[in-house]
Image (spheres, rainbow, N blue to C red):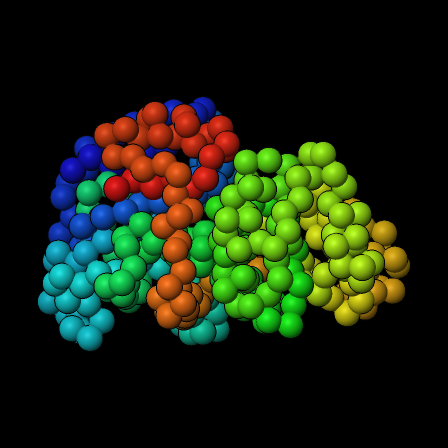
Length: 348
């Protein structure tokens, strides 16, 4: 089979790999959808190996198949796999981390925080940008029949990340929520928060993304390229500010806007990775009794809960996708995705 390998400096190669065979506790998935994520660009854009160094990870130099948002169908099962965990024909996503399963983080389902060093599929373990993917059976999360494989791919990272942040911040119908950044994660947060009953105010610097946010359940959407979003939010809330704010952009302006748009006793949650931000502590945080928290991806339990929430509420996650590609089109797909002008992209 051929899989996508990032070779550095905005280049990739379709390399040949042996078709995978499962070990005793492993399964092989036929990949039906593999999402493209903004975090992939951290490995696509820089020189080969630079991203590993920046993250403090060891680069073995071996080619690794990219893609950490896989969904597909089980086509081979190892001899020791419990049939309650995996079976031929099962529709499944992959929880894209694995760990030691002995440390406290692993034992509570937070394998990406493994104290002995996690495997991240698509980073230091082969990912889903290929026809087949071999993983331990324990990493599978069932995908209900009513959800598409593309929806499963979205849940496997971006949409799951948004859901976990909303749950950790305890969003409910009592809340007015601001979401800064309307890329795939932010748009998912808007869609899910609206389904939870919250009044959502969406913010982005792209007029196109602002318009999409209204289609995804935002009550108000602010184009931060033409208006001060904090002033606009204060006007919309009668000067009170929002009760929950999320930054999914990962840039200083978005984070600062999330903090400053909050009212008294509110919560600001940072979801987008990267960068720095500076606050004026007394008025921005202390005198509002503000809670600031970070939320990084999700647990395997959280992925399953997100999946069930989407199925139960009939949420149209597939609408996130603006671009669908085949693996053979990977070079063009990532050149297009690198522009970060559209919505979410997926290999089908």
